[in-house]
Length: 104
Length: 315
Image (cartoon, rainbow over all chains, first blue to last red; front, side, top):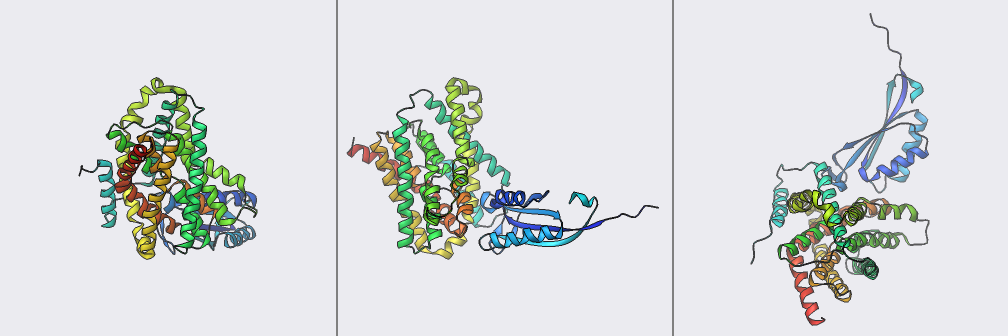
């Protein structure tokens, strides 16, 4: 019989955006005290057409941050105010269950 | 009519494959690798040439091409505002593309001249690196105005230490320090394979250009007219500068080509961050969809004739 896994709730903020924004997003996260994140390459299609990652100007990124709800909401608001108007960007929150809650 | 250079045929192949919506797709990492190779190879070649001559006479040439880049950006901005009725951010961003330079166009011009055994001054690679930068700063100033709280330190960092300028200057420093003899062991890679790599790169460029056609169709004839007229005007300015600086026919041809070319590496990246209101698809449709193929196929031979003619009438 296995012991039950004890998890805690945290918020996952996922962002899809054009890859040109990476240095700005990284600087934003450092400034807002976000301790950890993962960035990966992405491609797809949306309001700004097909982003097929074949060269610099058509690359997208996927940014994932797991943190406390308040911090995720603060960053989401910042993204909306700073980037939504002029850049290809989609961002959303979801609840996740994590081990080692002190890490996030 | 002489047969087209195989590198141009690779470009046309990519363009046609893209227009036919072929499944052909080169990995993004290959595009990066090929562009790094081309920038380094151009830098090394220029650097080893510079090792054999004094550097002081370069200063007035560097000053002249900075002014040329600024003048082209202002000219393009005025034309886009007045004739094409672009809004301020889009006119500024597109003008910056046209005031800066295209490394692939430079590489094709170099290959075109080399195939005809026309000598070119080694410092053209320096001028290529220098001409990338001023248009970016002028474009940002035109879009935002100079008085506002612009972070010029960060923008200059982006403009001067972007991928293109860093690799060109790094390659040049290595070429200059090692000299022609020192580069011998690596010339198999960077000299002998140059044209093959350029062919592959242009295949990818053909595919990229084919994707600009949708935007171009939406924008209509005005953008096409600008994409052809602007390089012709710039080539005349560039050739006149070359004659004024006492360059050879080869050097004047390259400077006219540099002036005529429009950037698609350094400038789009910088403008995306610095002028977010500008639509990158619009600038790229002009620079890549019209001007790049025009320069490759029609422009370079034409600029060579222009250079030869101007040097004959003003020896």
